[in-house]
Length: 427
Image (cartoon, rainbow, N blue to C red):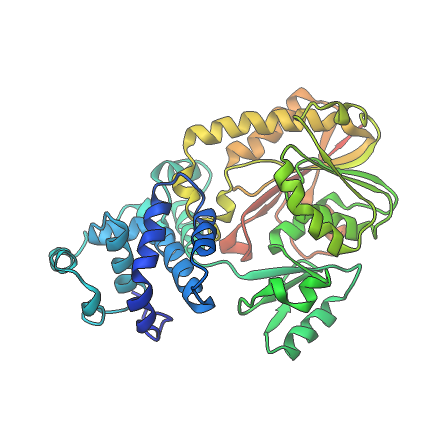
């Protein structure tokens, strides 16, 4: 149990009023038919009466349970949304069952009375709060002590990182503005464009956000863009642009000079990108909808591109602090299927490059099957490509971060999301 005053201990009235709402949302999430953040968004749209503190309580409770579900089930035998919430408030947030007594049903009371002390040594996957199959995969390349350290880091909420749009503001100006607003902010450890907030204000209405001077982006995501090292007046492709966070950073690094294509197969994701692009002030970005990775739009650019970023679809395990439900939404079979898709996308993107061009392959995963193994397979099939050591590129970019040949970021080592990236150049 965490022995310090918690948000729940100081907001017992919120438990009383919002326990049922949190239970409703968690029950929907536990079906694993939709991502947790989508379930929450849908619920909040339907329940507009809820205030900011109530929404925060419900969201934090649901995500708190998801981060600690293995341990809660092991310790208490909880097997319903309600029991998991009560166990979470009691075992993690430190609220006694007596404090919650007005909210307990006779069935709750019987369950609570039947809880016995768990065995002295829970299995490693319970301590790490990771699926057993995932721990087995990690054990092939990590010592148990490091797996547990990684798991513990993933149990904590992620900090709120922002990227400063250097086309419109400087980092010192942004930090100064937040300080004037009473928001504590400081520079991220490694990204030269990053700002980390100590609280989580409503950024969507903040003047800095509305003016396009900041974007929400994890520090790890910012760092991997520097591995591509884009230059002004180059032709660059972001092959899996999604909602465009990395595209916008690349455009700023190019100082809006040259041509930057934002490819994606999802019209919905590109539509989300458009208002962000408008706020950014960039004029060199060209969103393009693809039917698939072998679209004619890709083939027309073959041999013409200076740099390509392939931020491939992946398991997303590096983002478990933000998306803890992924632990139950992904499987070993999913990872194998993703590796095939990642290889196909990488093979489709490679012909875009002109001789001497650079390709960066990236995932928000820490699994070898999605990372080093995909790169090894690609290099076997493409002898005209070679690896550019990531630590050398980071040094050139004046970023004091050395993770060796590949960029490999971990929450427990670098306090950012888990990312992998490899820089490749063709002859």
